[in-house]
Image 1 (cartoon, rainbow, N blue to C red):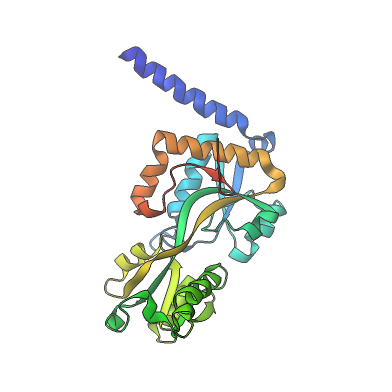
Image 2: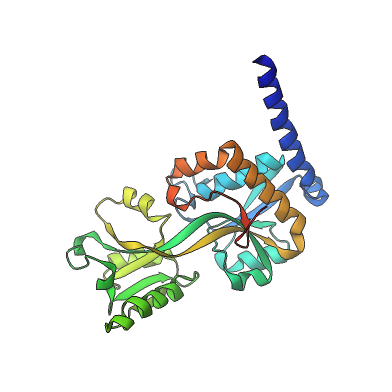
Length: 276
């Protein structure tokens, strides 16, 4: 038994060493990997109101990847609009901030897919009687962050489930972010909001009896850790570290902590292509 424990420990050390060796010398010499995030999307990435420190699902995923690679993670607060230019011009090394892996973004960035996300409609709880199902939104105004693909996804849903059924289309309003959509909803400027299904259960715990989910999540996409295409070696090292996290249970512990089980992956993929 003692030998088995020692052997298992040796395997873990060898595994960690293998990942560390896969990391390009550039990052070993720097002693760090710089990750850009936009901390305005709880529980994925946000600042703890009590300490103003970065926290959330993405932050713990990133720090755990650093542990696997044996390297320090330095976080940089980056606007969502500057994420891709930041990684392609080497101001940051990775993107980890709730960014969807979309084909248009793959022209300059590769994505290591680490969670799934679906668009979820929600309304004010006090209007529950008015909105019993998602189809009740036909002809109404729905707000969603213009920085995401959500407005296009909502319009496509509307064409399929409203227009084809002879109902008026949803009026889609692009907002400054998901927080802005929720604010406009509370103010009565829009009839419903839409954002990633991984975030709403957390927000509903913070504000009981404020929101009601409507229908099932749709337009399911992967969220990815972005890395410039020119940095393929870094991409592969990070993908290997994430794969090791799935194997040893680290990944699932973080998933359970933030209660995002519906968004969990079971295998690592790059640009939606599973690793062999």
